Length: 97
Image (cartoon, rainbow, N blue to C red; front, side, top):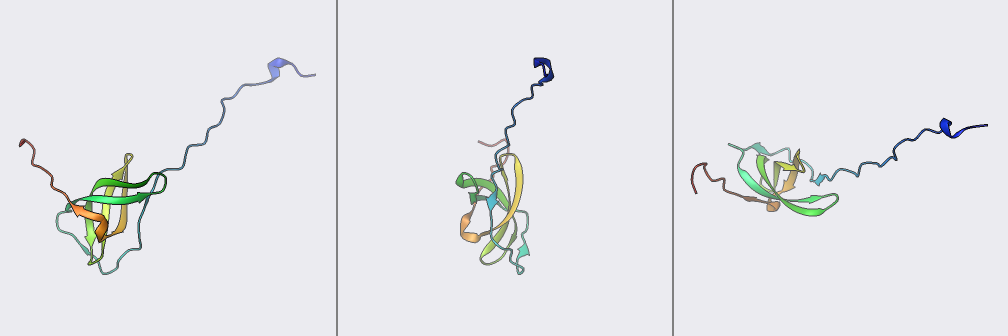
């Protein structure tokens, strides 16, 4: 005979949703390192929310592909993208309007 005191409460389990990841393409072995990590705008496809425009930096580049670093939702990502998904952006010097 079991009593009500034998039952223990435990919080319900809620699995974390899968992390939203950027999708890239295959690497280009002919790519060369860039000088100074130029700042860019990156149009990247994310697994959960679709296309997003994020600031980033180019680390490697070839004629048709770039290897970029970007931050999405607090996580740093590195991935290869077609060159047409990346546009240059300007970083304004501090202290100037």
